[in-house]
Structure formats: C-alpha cells, structure tokens
Length: 465
Image (tube, rainbow, N blue to C red; front, side, top):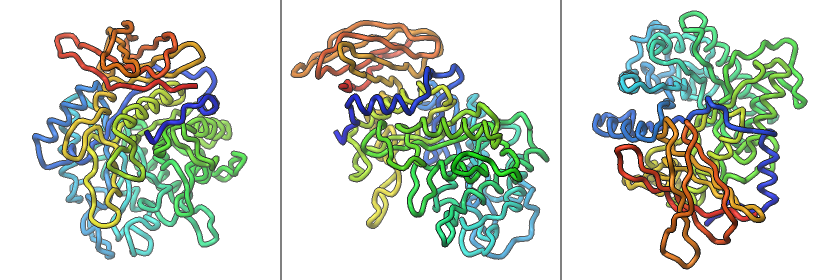
C-alpha cells in the first residue's frame, strides 16, 4: 500500500502526540456529512442515504450552509434592498429547509456550519465572494438563519476552513502577515451577537473548522488559532482582546497518503497523527483566558481518500485500514468530543487537468459501489503488534448496548478464515482484546445484530513495531 508507517518510532511519536492517560469520553460521538445526497432534489436518494446513515448508528449530521447559495442576487455587486435579518427574504433556503425537516423527523441532530463564499455585495470591495466579508452584514444574515432554524438546530459552527483562501481572503498581507485570523474573529463575534439577540443561549457554538496544513497561501491551523484568539507565539493574550465565545474548537484533521501516523514537519500543522498539537494549543489558550478552559475538540470533517485519485488516494483496502486507525487515534484522545465521516459517495471527476479536485473519501465509489471502507465504517478494526502480543481494538457502530463479536484471522498463504476468539463490547459498542503475536496475520470481525443478517468487516493487516 501507499502505506501507513508501522515502525516503533512512529508509534511512539503518535503516542507522544496524544495526551497522557488519554481515553475516549463517554460523550464522544460520530457525525456524518453527505451533502450531494442529502441536499439532492431526488427524494428517493435522500431517503436511502438517511437510512444508510442511521443503519450505521449515526444520529448526527454536519451541514454546511453557504451564504452565497441562499442570498438574493448573490453575484451582483449592488446591495439589494431587503431586510437582511428576515429569513423569508432569502430565496435559497428551500433545500436546507427540506434537509433539516427530514433529519428532525428522524430524530437526528444537525451541526449547521454557516460559511462563505458570501454574496458579492457583502464584501468590502465587491470584487469577489470571499474577500473581506462584512461582519456587520454577516451578523444580520446570522439573525435570519437563527430565526429560520433555531427551533430545529442546537449545534452551530462559524465558517468552513477560514484559514483557506477558497473560503476566506486575504489569508496574508503583502508582507506575509496572517490576516484571515483577524477577519474571522470579527465574524465570530458578529455571530455571537446575533445569538444573544435572537437565539437560544443554550445552543452550542463551535469555532475554528480549520484546514489541517498551512502553505504560502493557507494559514497554518495553529497560527490561525493564535491569531483568532489574540495570542502571540508563546500563547500570551493581548489585554485588549475579549475571550472568544466558543463551546468547542472544530478542526479537519485530514492526513496525506502517508497515512494517519504522518506527522507534518511544521509545528503549526495538525493532521490526525499530530492531534496532540491541537490539544496543547487549546489547553494553553484556555490557560491564557482566550477561550473557556477545558474546551473540547470536534473533528467535524474527516475522511481518507482512495483510488482513483493518483496523488492523494490509497488503495481501497488501505482506505478502510487508515480510516479505522484515525478513529482509534481520536478515540484515545480525551479532549475529542466528535469524530466524523466525509463523504458517503466519492465526488465526480471534473473536466480538465484537475480531474480529482474533489474528494474520493466516500464509503462508496462515484458509481455507488460499496468500498471496503463501507463495512469498515460499520465495524472499525485496528491491530497493533507489540513484541509478543497483538492488541485488537474495534467498534460495532450500530450498537446501543452490549453485544458480541467474533474475531477471525487468516495467515499468509491461506484462503481460509478461522475463528480466533469472541468478545463482548461495552455499552457503546467498543471492545479491545490481545492475542499472541503471529507475523503476517490478517484479522476481521463478524457481527450479527439481533434479528438481522450477519455483517463481516474487511480484512485488516496488523502494524508491526
């Protein structure tokens, strides 16, 4: 595979990036994002996708609401005359109305991320849809959104990847000083004022939603965090800055084809393998009184890209393995409140040179065929090899009570799967087991739900220290 590194040094490095004595909190949950299907005009496709997500045992969705997609005359530089705080004045809400209503009817909760791109008339210079959006106009728009969905939505987030120029500009000044953190800070406070005016103060407000790595065009996530929270490089806060109103820091901890144990060289980058960096940053920001102490981390967008993407994609089997390994890392991190899956189905290939500019992180191919990651999402499994023992960790995702699993193995050269042992999960579906070390052995899980058909997870390699 374009493999996950398996050497002991990297395992130790990952452990070092996780908090000491880390263990999943009972409140850690999974969310799912499937915008192509759930915002579709095809009612049968929406219903089928809702059914699949619920069959996984997932009860939470992330939905990104783009200001530009719902606003009147969004590409016009001239400001239209209308009440910007009136939800009925926005013509593009219909498909979001439908999604929210259908999710609510099924008892599902939504994290609504309100984001740019924005109407052209809502930017300072009115040249494009992402450069210097007006915080004042965003506050008015947030009032409209809250009035529209406040009764159905309890979890909110501000902006998708504001440290990326596709969603917010400028990222840097001409002297290469980060600018986007300050713009974002104004947007967050405008949203908070809208909640205080017309919202439910018991609702949860997440900030951040940061992309994982910085470049000369993208502000690194920890650089962005410090800038948005008025912190210097030593996490000392400017006295003139108020504490940011936030109930959690959201992040998109994507990694590369190197796998979930990859640790980027820049200390301001945070992939899933360097999640401890974000733990430390959030803790230090709390101590500096830039945010509330003990703030949780929400991994609101994550996936592993597979073939056919020739640059970022791994094999279909490796996608299932790496996704499970990433989930294990999140599970062990006591500050992580949520883990996520993006997408249900791969994005379609594009015309031109950037054929794979979308994401191939779905559990299904673009044609709808289930990948190994589909059953791997239902039954995540990780096998980590020590000196004399192999530790197995897994989850029965639909489980809502204790249940039994069967662990099977297959040795090199054999086509036959054999029963290794059985195990019982805890009440949330998690289980762990150790077994003697056997080199080149593969594992899989079988689970039979009460009154249902048996489910078999994909074959998983063990990772050798």
